[in-house]
Length: 492
Image (cartoon, rainbow, N blue to C red; front, top):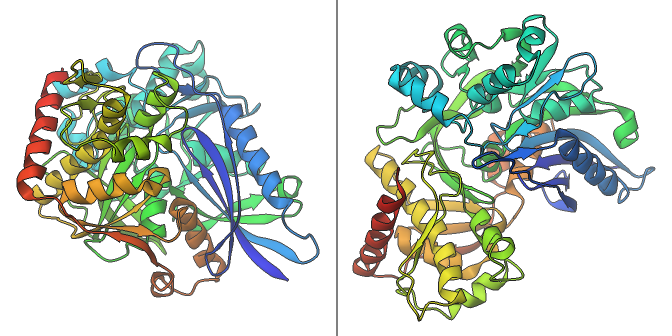
C-alpha cells in the first residue's frame, strides 16, 4: 500500500490541500479561493465558514485521486495564515463574529494607547513582538468588547479563541481538540516565548480569560484524530505550524543564519537564530521558528503586509492587467529607471516601519507614464521592501548571504533577478514551489516516524534556479534611495 502525508495550507485568499509521498514529492494539489470582506477602512475579514468549506472542498477533491484499496493517508498537517483571529461558542461551535484577518487595522488606536502607556518594552521582552494591530491580542479584545454578551460568555467559559489552525483542528476533530502549536501561539502577543506559556500579565493587560485559549503543543506532535467522515477513515493530525515557520522548515533552514523569504499575499523573511531569542534593535520580530521534542528554535522575522496583494490590486482594483502573470512581460519591456515608485501601504506599513496609519501612494507620474511603468513599480515595491528588511537584519548583526525563496510570485523570472540585484545577494529558488505545505508535511512525517531526523530532510532540498546580482552598487543605491524618499512621504 502506498502511503502519503496530506497538508492543509490555509492562506489569506485561498485554501489548498497538498498530497505528498514519503519522499516529499507532490502527488496532487487542490486549491479554492474564498471571499475577502472590507466593511470599513482598515477592516479586513473572512467568514469562518468560508474558510472551513474551502478546506473541506479541497480535502475531498484530493482524496478522489487516491485509490481506496491501494493508497492511504497516514498523517495530516495544518499550516495557516497567522494572527487571524476567530472566537466561537464552545457549545454550538458557531463563531460569534467574522474572522479578523492579520492585515486588519481596526485596533490601531488601542495599540497607540498601549504604546503611550509605556507597555511596549513589557510586551517586547515577553513575546518578542512589537505592539501592533497585526497580532491577535487586540483583535480578541475588540471582539469581546464589541459583540453583545461576548465578554460575559467568555468569563463564563462559553467562548473559545483560535487562530485558523486551532479552528480547523477543532472542526476536523468534531470539537474534541482545542490546541495550537508554539509557532502560532508566539504570534498572539499573549504567549511568553521564553517560558513557552500563556502569560498572566499579558492576559490581564488585554482583559482576556485564559479559559478561551488553546493548549500549546510542539509543532510536531499528536494534535488529535481527524474524524473518518472527512477523509474516509481516521487520520492523525501530527504537524501544525504558522505558514512562515512552515516555509522555513520546508526550505530546511535548520542551521543558524539560514534564511528564507516567502512571496505570497504578503512577504515574510525569516532567519534562523538557533536556541537564542535574539532581540532586534531595528524593529524586527523575535519569534518561535519551530518546537520539536520540547526544544525551541527561534527566528528573527520581517513582515511585509503587501507583496502579491499589490499585483492583485493592479489586476482587480485598477484592472491594468487581466492576469498576474502578465506583469513579467510588462516589466521586461520597461527600463529599471522609469521614475515611478509605488508604496503599497494599503493596510499600513509593516517592518521595519510599523506604521499602521500609513496609506498607499504612487509617485513620479508623468504624461509618459503608462500601464507597464505602474505594474513594474508594483513588482519593484516587493523587492524594495525586502531590501528594507535585509538592511534591518544587517544592523542586527545577521546578514544571510543566500536567500531561499518560495511562494506564488517566485515563478516571475524578472522579479527574482531584480530581487537579487537590489539585495546584492544570491537568491535560490526551491525546486518545490509548495514549501509551506511541505514544511508541515515534514513536521507531521517526523512525528509519524517517516523521517528520522532533520539531517534526512536537509538532503531533500534542491535548488531549481540560482539568481546572482548583476546590477552595479551605484545603480542599486540610486534606485533604493528613490524608494526611501517615497516611503517617507506616506508615513503618518
